[in-house]
Length: 367
Image (cartoon, rainbow, N blue to C red):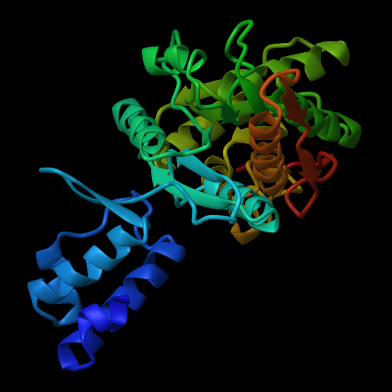
């Protein structure tokens, strides 16, 4: 008996089939990035159907192998793809709103190009949620994993160390250079090289008194500081910036205080990690009566919102889409050739020059 015969041809069968079609589209569109469907009661309310109709529609997806039920927990998207569609790759990222959307785009495009399927999970910067997502994707049949782990201040979380011995191959994204002698495969940005390029740009313009403002991060900030110090030292300058401030979260008042220190030290330029901090500094300069870039040159980092600043920001731009694409290529290669040499790839960010940098003014504003 076919599925349509089992459902019948009456209104009830039609409703069930239409809802099943809607649910298949929702799964394909990654409408539930955490990988868990809403409850049957919630779906019934959202779709204006009965709970029994929802249950029958979900039963169809379970029979097709698209989703599976976990007793007492809920219904989840299954990682295993349909026959002939290539590998199923689980992807765990810490955020869906900043930086990582372009990485995800690169992964998805590369996997789709080769008939593979991406199963996306967002861990919200929570190591425990990361561990649970990795375990769930592994249990549900992922052929490989691409993960952006939230590293601790001092050491990797235990689940990441254990993952090196897992039978399911894993590629790290934007992590790896912080892990001494790791055997993990990874694709990441060379943030030190990106910061060095930014400072060398300022040095070529004639700036020698450069400040640094950062949002504290165990992943990227240490590399940015390293690149900044290297560029200053190789130019024969003190490797310590004239002013350096690191805060977990910046406000406009914090930017004002940083600018006060920079002006007292006769600074003419600043590198900021990340774009938001740079935008706050531009606002602080405007309030003080300083012109950007005539009185103060400012460089952002990440190039996420740099072009939206009131003065479009010169910014360091990691190759996010390419990083995602290379990670997808790496995991496919590892699955196809488990015994091949392990690879660790580093991409150098680009400096995008816009309106926020210029040679220092001979007659800077007095503020």
